Image (cartoon, rainbow, N blue to C red; front, top):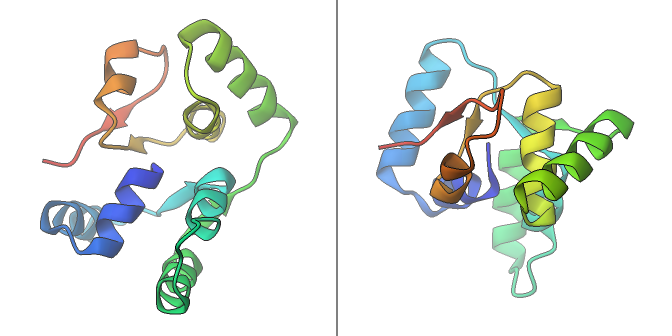
Length: 122
């Protein structure tokens, strides 16, 4: 899941909650990239309550760590598609781990990245 999906889920956005619930009912396993965890936990105005909610959410998903394969793929994605570094890492994490990327980032869809399967909650 992209960071924007995690944020929407934690804010209680109904379409995201329904989408995630449907995927879980289908037996899906939820993953986030290490960079998503870093983005979520490093927010400047993070309250203690929000920190507890984020940690609770992260405890229920698998965090895919950055490794040399993800790093190399992220570098290639950033160069080839001119992605911002966090987006490049998230896309690379999904590609290396053969995951569908759930995102609201329509810019990623327009990039048509080979092998990157995107789902956008509706």
